[in-house]
Length: 68
Image 1: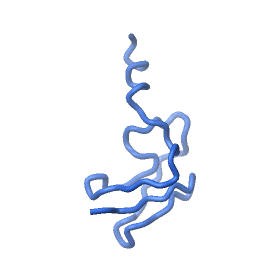
Image 2: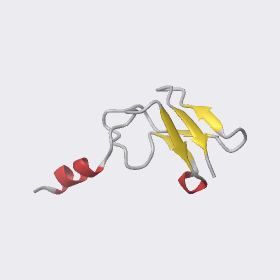
Image 3: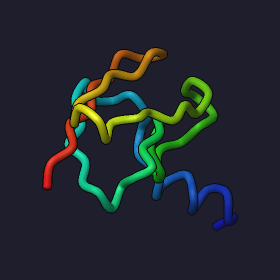
Image 4: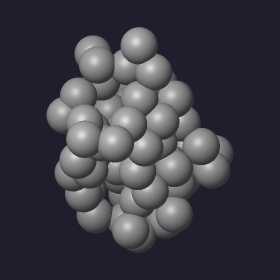
């Protein structure tokens, strides 16, 4: 099996859910998140969630909540 095919199976589909709960270990937060394939998504955008604990991605509308 080729390396690209193996990596493709490990990645999750970006923008598959509408809400994500994250922890401080996920900071700095960006959408799409690590482990999501980028080829079929929007450009990576960093999201400043620390101040309010909640934020929405301006590209896809996915919401994020910081839980600790």
